[in-house]
Amino acid sequence: MQVGVLALQGGFEPHLDVLRSLGVAARAVRTPRELAELTHLVLPGGESTTLHHLLTLFGMWELLRARHAAGELVVFGTCAGAILIGRAATDGARPPRLGLLDVALERNAYGRQVDSFRAELEFEGAPLPAVFIRAPRIASVGPGVRVLARHGADPVLVVGPAALAATFHPELSGDSRVHQRFLELAPSAAVVS
Figure 1 (cartoon, rainbow, N blue to C red):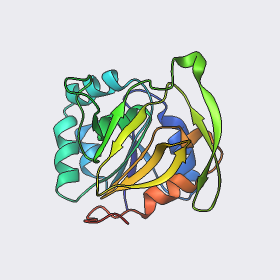
Figure 2: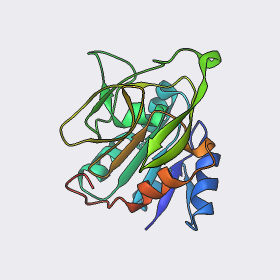
Figure 3: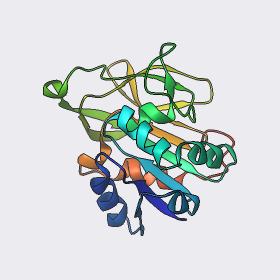
Figure 4: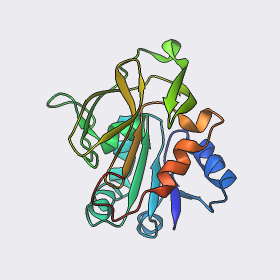
């Protein structure tokens, strides 16, 4: 297993810290060569339009899509990263999306930065602290995707073939179970695990 965290923009360091606390030799990823060596990639929170722009500028947008489609890469998107790995909830929404996970997301659905909040979710039969910062909302979930946690009626943690998405920031919660779930996904997964 070769694990990396996209380190072009956004909150990548806390993800590296959590993964390293789990005994994983995770590394920061900034080049197509580094991306090509991975089996698992975290796309962190940040600003989704900027992340899209930088992934395209650095030649990783199509490589990421191709490696996932070939069954070579597991992806985990948090907040802005979740926006990018999903699909848009409405036609023409910006930024463009990778469409690696069959979920439609709306940007900034819970309000502005000052509207950020903490909540307790249920995950795998136990409480999970969650931090929501300008969080997206999952508007719909496709048939191959399973909801792992909700905030009220809204799905906030979902898993599909070789992909995991959280609309919150599990790297800021002090609980590593979501990252552990990501590490358990197989790159060539053909069905939801």
